[in-house]
Image (cartoon, rainbow, N blue to C red; front, side, top):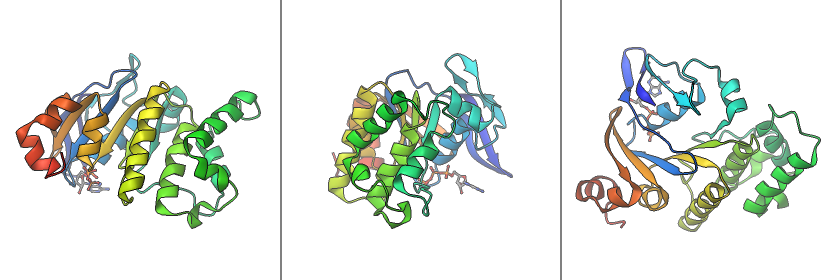
Amino acid sequence: MRGLCVNYGHIEAIRDISFNVEEGTIATLIGANGAGKTTTLKTISGLRKVRAGAIIFDGKDITHMPPYERVLRGISQSPEGRGCFPGMSVRENLDMGAYTRKDRKTPAYQQDLDRVFDLFPRLKEREKQPAGSMSGGEQQMLAIGRALMAKPRLLLLDEPSMGLAPKLIAQIFTIITEINAQGTTVLLVEQNAAQALKRADTAHILETGEVVRSGTGAELAADGSVKAAYLGGDV
Ligand code: ATP
């Protein structure tokens, strides 16, 4: 991201944001409500128009590329609020994640499906269940699984721990680490700063649309002002 600015009408949602996500790492964006985290992810996905600045992915300028082409290039997102298709089964939701793939009848596709079911055995158990009847945590797993079915090189996760019980939060973060260990680069937006900083190679603090601090996850987790503002008594 190079000097990225995004507006909603006259509101400047993000202003002059620059940061890198290195291949193979987990990067996280931390910030209060309204700081611009979701807007940043939507802009990388191509769902928001850029007013100024550029997004470079794998050496190519994708700033004005349509969203579906970004998926083809390897960017896929699990959105805030999960966005599962409620009337479709778990399996159909996963297949929708692979909509742009042409290899859906091949063993490679089945392998990717198996990988998602290995990461989330609950989805395998409920393959035929309508997504709308799944619990919040199960729908979160489904949203991440669906994003993985696009075979992303960069996985964007918007608040994957939102609304989940503590035990499930820990499980989701373990799975995110596992997804990264299997070779997928991750950009994670989180309000659960303690968990996110623990897992992240690099972290950026967003305040009212601007990056105000960057560092390794460990550096920011140890920083007094970050602790006071975002970690409470958590760490
Ligand atoms: P949260 O943690 O609450 O989800 P966030 O950091 O993801 O917040 P954004 O959703 O990116 O923040 O919002 C950034 C700013 O842009 C906020 O001031 C918000 O009110 C504004 N905004 C977001 N979406 C819209 C929209 N569709 N129309 C107008 N303003 C919007």
